[in-house]
Image (cartoon, rainbow, N blue to C red; front, side, top):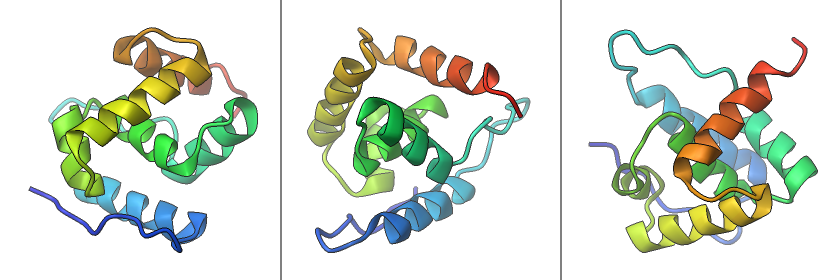
Amino acid sequence: MLCGPAATPSEGPRSLMARVTESAEAVPLAPGDEPPLFDPATLARDLGREFGVTSKESEVTYFAALGKTSAEISVLLGNSERTIHKHLQRIYAKLHLDNRKAAIVFIHEYYRSRPS
């Protein structure tokens, strides 16, 4: 089980995303899984610019798109499961979606449709 320190208020976006990248690299893919089409820093930049998603919401979105449960995300990010659910609710509202499955499909389709 992975557990990292929670983000501090003074932690900047660069160090926060570096920590997310390190956490993501430590999470092994299951046999047959493909690596994601996007990296955490790109996701944070793109969702922030186009939809007003915060860096913390981007972290949650990244791990949700990898198929992590709220409980797993809470351990990875050092937050409570309730906090993760609140972040997800804000993400759904910003992306005009109804649920996690729709958000995951949206993220994957968003990156598949982008030019390389």
